Image (cartoon, rainbow, N blue to C red; front, top):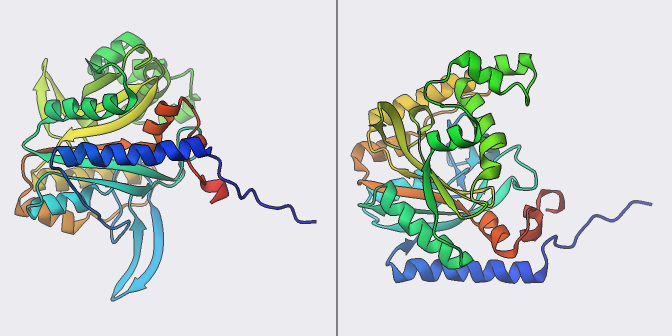
Length: 322
């Protein structure tokens, strides 16, 4: 006899009620600050070049468009809105990332993303604190640099450690042949995941900022202490990464160069190269206002609110029950 599929939600009704309350809290927070809620496509013509992200392709044929991608973030479309004069905007959206399933990950998840013209990363960190601490009723975050966190918890200086010593430091997690295929940033990400992040925000929330320039993604770069660092930040609470924010890059030529560098890394890692989003680049060329933006995982925020370590406890139907 064929077994019946699991059809019931994995989240309790109390958790689902808290999700609805969280959405109301977020909308009220931004309404009081005159930040406009917007909607952008979940299905787009382009994916992302980011080497550490894998999109979900969609088979679609309509009006000469063949194929597309479920969006990993609403970022490119929202920045096109900013270039068109939208002003301060936010969005609550469903986003998709292939291959991500675990206690903290589901391939489909809920993201809050917002952009503030006239803000830099420091100003946006303050607003992130207002929202997160207001909802969780927790202390405001401390701030420490990427370099300080690596020295404290991984025992290395990420800016001047040699490649040989860095690989040696990662040997406890990977076999030698696996390490040979890992880039410098790949090794640093490994250390961040296993040595640093579990210790972050266990006593009070903590922002990590001043990432290496090689990990800037879409953030501006400046020099601090003789090293190029990115105007990028992450918020960690109880060992959980909650958000990723930038003082946004507005230079179209620099952005195109980063897309090309991303594809070189994807090729080296055996991943398919991705087409640059030319509509996004055209918006940058037209003129993106000076702004800061952040993406925050709403499922993880809810996990912290109800005190669970498993994302299935805050989702009605995770992938295996969808």
